[in-house]
Amino acid sequence: MTDDRIVNGGAQPEDDDPHFTFRPERLDEMIGQDDVRDQLAVFIQAARERKEALEHALLVGPKGLGKTTLGSVIANELGVGFKRTGGQVLERLELSQILTSLEPGDVLFIDEIHRVNIRVQEILYPAMEDFTIDLVIGQGGPGARAVHVPLP
Image 1 (cartoon, rainbow, N blue to C red):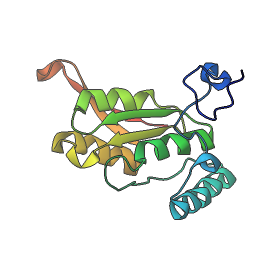
Image 2: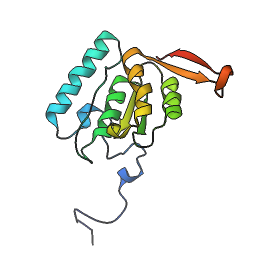
Image 3: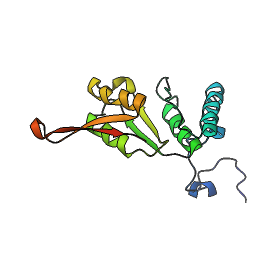
Image 4: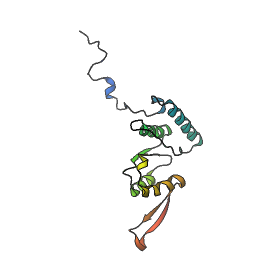
C-alpha cells in the first residue's frame, strides 16, 4: 500500500537544506508590500549606479511587519555587511564601537530607534550627517583628550 497523502509528518528533502530560510534574503523573494519593494529597488539601483552607500533610510511600521528583514535585504542586495542593534539597549561606548567597526557601505540597523537615549543621539547624529565621531581617550581629568575619528 502506498502513501499518496499530500501532507505527512515525515522528513522532506528540503528539511536538510542549510540555505532554507523563512526570511527573504533578496527583494525578488519578498512577498507583499509591492510599493515598498519597488521603492527600495529604485534606491538600491541608484546607490549601485553611483557606486555609493545607500543614504539613510527610516523603516516605520508595527511589530512583525518585516523592518529588520528589509534592512537585511538591503544589505544583501548591495553586497555589504549588516549589523543590528536595539535602540533601548544602545549605549555611547557600544555605538562608538559599532560605528568604528563598520566597513564602507555597511548597513547599520537600529531597531526601536525612537528609544535611543539622548546621550547616544549626541554621537549618532554627527555620525550620520558628517561621518565622524569624537571620542574621549583617557579616564578624564587633565590626561584625557578628544580624538576626531572619521567613519567609512
